[in-house]
Length: 523
Image (cartoon, rainbow, N blue to C red; front, side):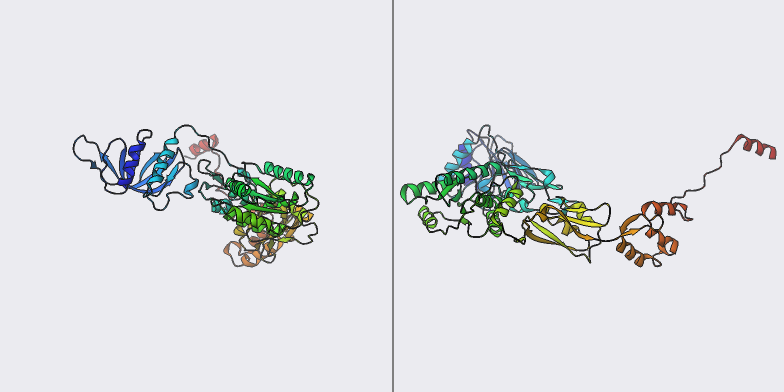
């Protein structure tokens, strides 16, 4: 409203070019800043690149004397700016407003907060570096194929709305991305990787911490992953309380919301007895909770946990009374991408697993079950599989599957016309998961003319049963016989048939000089 916005605009007008979008009829008292009236329909962008769509827009009429005049209202106006200051006190104009750079929002009745906001806005002048937190490898993305949507984990979890579909893959707006890392933690194909720090650097730090502790004589170290808020709690506990237990090793990260199941399992594989993530009030928790359930299904529930505690004394009390399981005796060094790290760590943590580990729904590992009675081996699933887990055999009707490559994206289930595919979330730690196995196969049909193998015998017989003698195109036995021919023989048969669809009108006779002279002689 004008009574709040005009005063702030007057103070900022000396350092910024200010436009006030007033939502009431309060008249401005100065021309040091621009004033318009209207309601914001939508807001997109970030610091240095905001775009607003405004409805019921009214602008000041130019004039030198008398009161201010206003133009007629209109919808669909578009404006662009570098900074947005929201003094409405209502619903934020963007998702995750505290993570959107350049979007400043306070309660309009809080005069102290408004004064602090004016100072913050005045500092947003200059050249800034925008960190690139994540990297996207488009060829690995399993978002969609042939306009069929598969994986949407990153789209569903992103708190700022920085991720949008871009055809068969997704794209991330680096100006909006706040670097929480949740998308990288949930990406089943490792198409999105977190770069602050990279997973290889994080695992290297974990390995050095565990190795150094054991070399100093320790037996069962515990890893406490935290952010800057957790670091302050640890310092306060050390200065005014008992401090951390001697076997708890803190590991500070910029954000902990991207610490996924691969990193949790890698911590246990490195030899830590427990791996706990200390959350702060601003931590995005959706991905962490999902990843913890998955990690516990693979590595056990005793050694993994999330700590949601804001009191330093309560934190230390919890750590001193915490149950500490025995660590892995023979520590390993998992390497590679997140999927490879998870598999190597799971094998070390489950050395005697004879059966695949059952995983929760939406897990990125698993197999598929095919109803062989319903499957017609059309191989639509093979053509859409983004990871190559489903493979055909060019020599015979056969559907092969490599479990280690399966992302459980669901594209095969979506595209199957017979609804013959079911996803089975599990983690097979045996070497069988690395090799191909046959899910369904049938006998090929032999061409009645040349004997070449083509198609699926049961499918050809089913088509013969449905069309032969009933469909007008295949009313006679000769026409129906074409169904039993390979492509080459079918074309040959059609070309030499009486009702050949490729036949054109007879070629006209070439007229010669004799024909002209013959017509003259006849006359």
